[in-house]
Structure formats: C-alpha cells, structure tokens
Image (cartoon, rainbow, N blue to C red; front, side):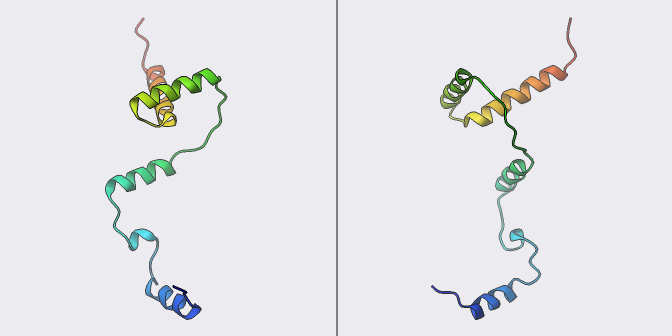
Length: 88
C-alpha cells in the first residue's frame, strides 16, 4: 500500500496531541518495567580473560539465561557483599 503525502497529513492530524506511543497503545506492566530497566543502564567496557567469558557463557547456558545478565547479577552481588560490614 502506497501512502501519499495527502494520506500522511491526514494520519498526522489524527494523532495531534499525542505525546508518545503510550498515548496510542496499552503496554503490559512487565514490558514497561523491562524498557525502563534497559533505559537506566549504561554501556561500559571491561577487559576480561577469555576463560572468564567462556566460563560465564557455560554457566549461563546451564541456567538458560543470557551471560551478560548473569555477569551483571554477579557484579551486583559482589557490590552488595562489599557494602556489608565485615564480621571479623
């Protein structure tokens, strides 16, 4: 279907006052949460040994999870442990 300029202008007039796609669609709460989580992350680069990446991928495959998510979880757990007072 070819959309002419006249048709595009008509379609645009229908959506006047629409701020974003959430005004047009209803999203599941789970999808909204995942979108917000992804938007709150920043990309970083770290250098790891090949064996570390390979092991993380093997463990992630056994758990049926993406290896990057698993590594983020490990980093988060390590940070939480570091923030706890030592019990010496």
